[in-house]
Length: 274
Image (cartoon, rainbow, N blue to C red; front, side, top):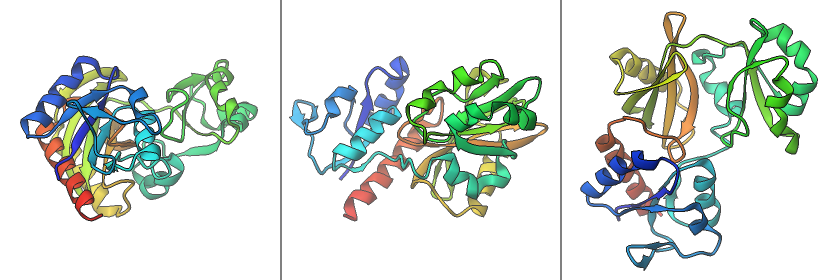
């Protein structure tokens, strides 16, 4: 069975159109679905018919959209987004030597606020540190933060005192690329930023693909069968910025033909092995 693609409505705007067109060009059904349509027990209607509750489906949108599929629907694969694997506390243990943030601490956000002065003494550069939540559900955007604004930036973590954050020294970054990986293979890439500003270009230099391939060859652990790696240049070399889920990370200008072929074949194999 070939998968049905469900793309979350209202997230990527007109940028969704090329992805929808490519999925349909390859002979599959694709539709835009609002998050509310996935509520527990709801029937999802595609092309005027209810979607098979145990069908082959790929969800693609935000993290809450992917999790709603995983928690309340029996589709296979449903969504590739394993939060326990895509938490920094998990994958840093495998990819540590490749990380941009080589020196860091992971602690509950409320503790980070309490220990602000110590953190800035350890990691502060020009009165700034880098901080981000460790998990997929990003309560605040990872960024450089001053000591004065630190407590306010991390305030959302107070709603759940167990929410962990990464704190590290800020690093300068040049170009950044999103890499799509299936198993041991790099299947697509796109530049998405330069110097911290949005700068989208298709593909990547060969050395970026070689760097990603070398990581995948050395690190055998995988967060999901298909996932994304963000790579940057800093200090004259390449580094891993973070891992992201396939189902909740944008593709920018990755080769959509390759991505749709690979993801669809992966989904079909998963459904057939049930």
